[in-house]
Length: 136
Image (cartoon, rainbow, N blue to C red; front, side):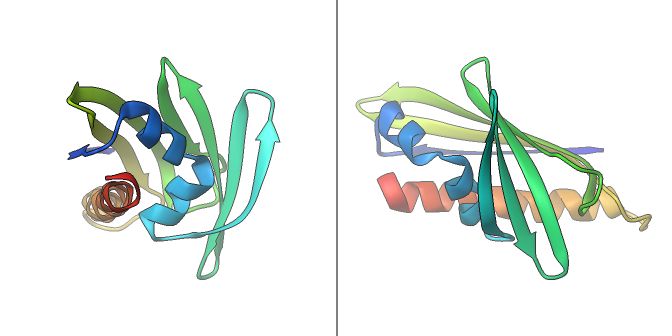
């Protein structure tokens, strides 16, 4: 299992950035999957995303004031994936968005977890760049 962390300061208030960080928007902004549908399930939101030859349910929850999401089923690119998004006020209406993700590749490849972490870092960087463009 590998951990990836990316962070960026955005020229927007925390409330503005938090309003933009909706589950479907997050999935689209990462750039690897398209959103097929969004399902509300009690205290969680499940985004069913798809890509070439794959359908992937991602479960989003609020945990301790941050957004936490996981790959909900075992059928997907990862045997385990969890991501936490944290929004923190910096100064003068600026906000730090930090994304931390742990990943483990489902396929038995040499250096598979390194490849998964590299791919995940790119997705999270896309998310931060999209957030900065949208609200910054």
